[in-house]
Image (cartoon, rainbow, N blue to C red; front, side, top):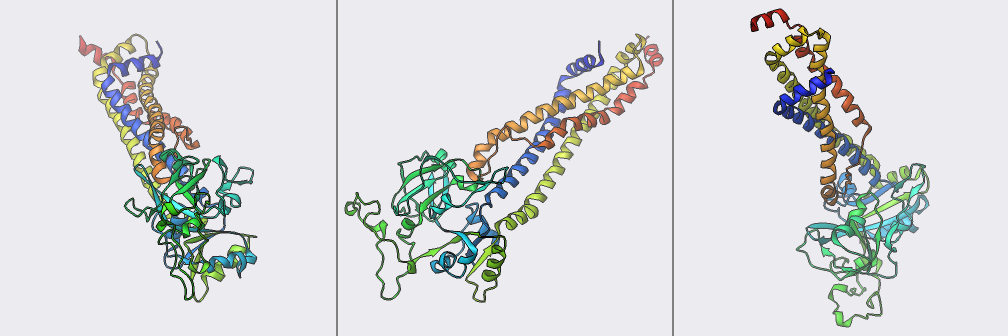
Length: 446
């Protein structure tokens, strides 16, 4: 009988102790896998979300992190808006020579879908037609694709598209209508309905959990327009028109676009014409004496966020998981070592029947390795099972997509590392077995 079979039999005889020790090892490995995979997926997600443009321009009252979090990740309270005339500088003003694409964002509304609250982003069709959301492995741009329907029409004020996560969680589909809520609370006033004309295919970015409305319709909602200047007429609010007065044949209900003097934007996504554009615009915007707005490179902010917060947290969690595995290893050592006195007679009989000292030592080492190996395999399966079960919940609340099959190459080092570690912790009891005095034990038995 090989020493692996004998080691397995010994484990079965001590099934409770072996199971508990293996469980502690499995929990340590599972936690380590969760830390490794979640960190890498989160880093990749955060980095992907900030691609496709060079700068985000927003209000000067607030920090760059707040601007990035609200604009890129749809989290937190938006900064104070900037005049629409400032946005026009990027399309036909002093910043236009350096700008390839400028896409405005207007924030402040939300949509309650079941128990979840999703951000409503008012923008233009250019977001999906001209801006990529990332890059493929060959360097080509990843452009938005519609799983159903189409992009909203610039001249149809009350059309909208929804992200893949929103569509899945709320059941919204092409042809459905939804009412944005004023503010980020479900208790806010309900606005005029928007019609869903498109559902975005999954992008793996925060845009999967947002709704995108035509900015022209957003401006016509109650509370979204500035006070008219002297001589201007107040605009007609879509929220205050009686549905009986709507012209159902007119997608805009007979309303006219809001005058530019009554408009504001929360932020602007800017893609520059060349690599010098971001530096020039950064200087012109951030060094302006009046400082109406601030320009932020989202990639740098995300990197600082990851290095300053996510990185240290990962290190702390990794230290904790290593300690858990070490404790599990010590448990293996104590469990096997304490059983040596019970098994000393069996070891002496094996020696008397011709088993060599090295064979006896190998059996004890094999037992330690088997416990660690089985615990490690169980930990790998447990870690990925937790990823699969928690993935939908995490994605709904944070936009970070976790899947059962998410794998990191560092995981391949865990099992070999456990074998080496088990050999080390099993060495002391194995050495004790090696030094067993056959004559004293068997003689004492007589």
